[in-house]
Image 1: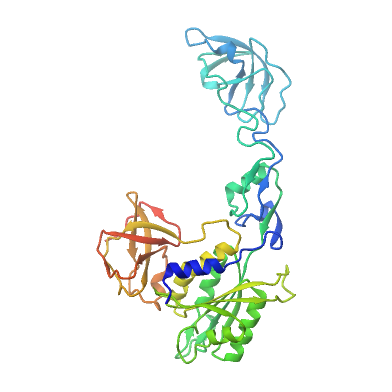
Image 2 (image 1 turned 60 degrees about the vertical axis):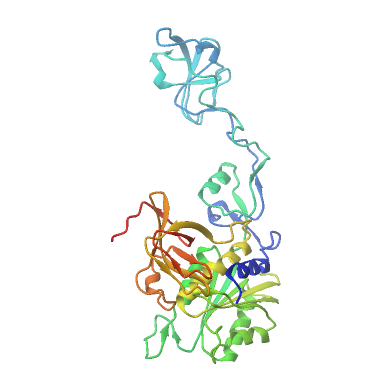
Length: 432
């Protein structure tokens, strides 16, 4: 069994990120949210585009108002009003001012804004009641960004702030990586889909649905291939098809040591190189990781070039499958997607008001809820048993407490390492 850190390092070393030449798409800006930028982007416009006002007030010459105060005000002639979107027509000379609004273009001759709260207006005259600082409330052209300089680096996820930056820079089409394709199959003759009537001895398949949701949330495209019975020929044909259409293949079940666990043998028969067969974690000990070099089916759209395929054989128990995804598959998907960093899980330190226990033989993940209470992370175990077949109490889980090999107890109130798997909220108060 490989320790978790060694398995993670091996997997990430195997991942070959998408190619910025072959695996690129040009998307309209409106469609680029949550995609990974494939090449760095530069803008053709300075930002701000021109000198403009940061406040409503009056554009003045600083030398005219630098000495004024309440008992010694300065009165200026208003020669122009400059609303937003208007190009000033007048030059501001000594003794003059322009009424101006937030975001409006500065007139020639003015170098300072006096906010309206420090003025008194009468007809076409404005009295300045307090001296501003030099160049107060003026946003200078190119103060925030100079045209031609790098604007956004490759390998970042485009969220709302980046989309706003690209819109401001008039980047209406954006080079992004295509979404990685992830084929998902569940193995086991006992499995049925949720729309079928449940018979004695059968199990409703939840793994495909959960894994598809996780894949989509990582920014990849899930391809559901259904439930494959414990029949080696059908399983081999399905895995071979999956390898021809996807960048990563996920199967759940069939990777332990039972009489009907065929996955590892089939992978070897298909020419795969198996790198991992089990990991020293709980839940999730049975984990197969293999690689393939294969050609793609021509009907994929857009076509995917021949490539290096990663195969993850996940455990069949629902919690084990999800923990294995969070711990090992998600980092691989992040690297594959073209992200420049931040692949590995987010680990933080916090405390648990409850005692945490493990057998100490493997790195153990206990699931529950994480919140920030009084400025510190707090982990609360999910109610009910910490059993890899109990997916019911997995609902609303957003963190896993990590107990290292050799540690059997973390006392209530002691520090514990926590792996974040969802949003963490502040000042949450649990009931007793």
